[in-house]
Amino acid sequence: MSKDTIKIKYSKHEHLLKGSFQSVDFEQDGFKIIYIPSLGISSYGNTYDEANEMMKDIVLKDFCHSLLEQPLSKAINDLKELGWDTSPFFRTELSNSAHIDKEGILREFELSEDTVLNEGLVTV
Image (cartoon, rainbow, N blue to C red; front, side, top):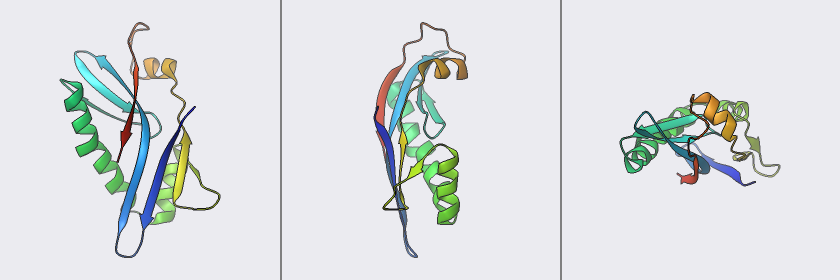
């Protein structure tokens, strides 16, 4: 089982987030979907390139911006509510055991059992 990771740089002058996330992609109703279970976010497009572009340029960017607009303690608490754990050594380094629950994804997106789910990696 791999781990998703987030590292937050939070100073008076700069707020940055770097991360690596397990993703799942699949096709639904003619659209290509990319889903990041550990963050509960998804994107779509007519092609996987469009869905990936939407994920990186819009969805993740908005998620990171919204998270980093908050005080650091609130941002960390929000991530903990999504199942993230802080490092015992560095409070701004978090990880999430990236177990992909394929049956749960099929249920959540109301997909048939024969839907092909492909695992991938998204970084910011």
